[in-house]
Image 1: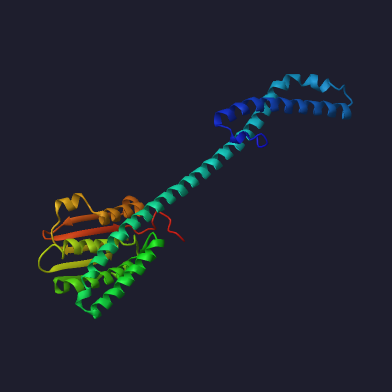
Image 2: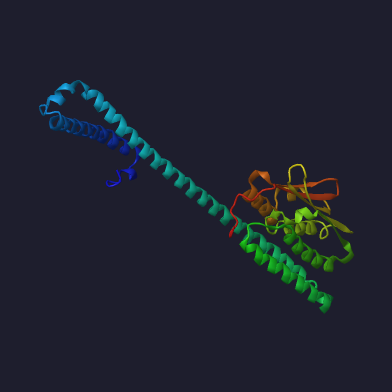
Length: 304
């Protein structure tokens, strides 16, 4: 089988080859056994060279079936083991391919999110230049921190929630320079939530969306709150971003690049175990809620 590369043949062709060869080998094996037994009888028992064969002629069929069963069983075990091994390798290759595709899709989603976010950040920074060198210098420093975090997120499928929260803090400080007293930020973060993995730019996107449709489009003071907690019953991470404002119908049914990418990245990393919900509840307050399971993502993280 190995010498003639039968294992590389299609299954049907391999079965035909084996069905023809195994009976032939069983017949040859049976003949060799009978010749050996006849030689043994002649040399030790001093009988005629074919007396033993004549006495055992009635057992030819039984011995042939026994030889056929023995060789057929060994060949079946060998072929079956080969197919199981090939199937396992095929499954591993399929998993590697699926992981590579998912990772590529995550990379593509990150590429789509970050230019969108950075464009808005630079646009906001331009409006701060006229407010004085001190505020502009502080804004440059915080924008640099956001850019460093953006580069860090290039090589990670997930980041610590605490790392993402630090980038969000820098972003909100930039927005506070622009809106001043018209934007009020509240945080309620459980310490246990800081080490949980989340997709990079997830919280940033939700907060940016809250500022965009809250403080930017609604008169008066905008209240923005960020909360994160661990559910003790199932260990899930719950993140909630709330802002003063109204949820428009077109905004709900036609999500922008940021929110759509957040939803897709959550699905790629955690499947149906993670979800993003956006609703106006109570009236006048828009809430974006994210639920992430307490497990490692299904997509392999580079370097892990």
